[in-house]
Image 1 (cartoon, rainbow, N blue to C red):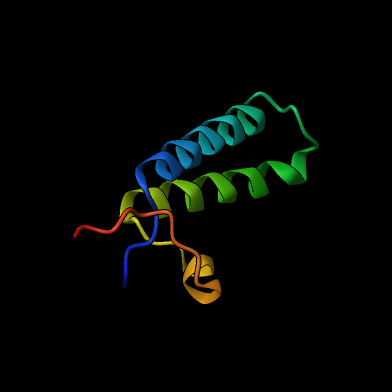
Image 2: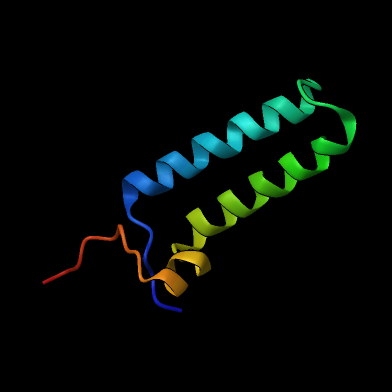
Length: 68
């Protein structure tokens, strides 16, 4: 897949994942939503590590600086 996630975007994704995990783990939201937050965190970490966001591929967005 074509990479489209830049370094600042990766940091933001890791921060979102950390907040989602914290909120789910400390039960800041109702119980069924814990699983949703864990899923969001997993998706954020996965897309940050891989460097590709499928939603952004579909919409044509790109935060990765091109190497020229």
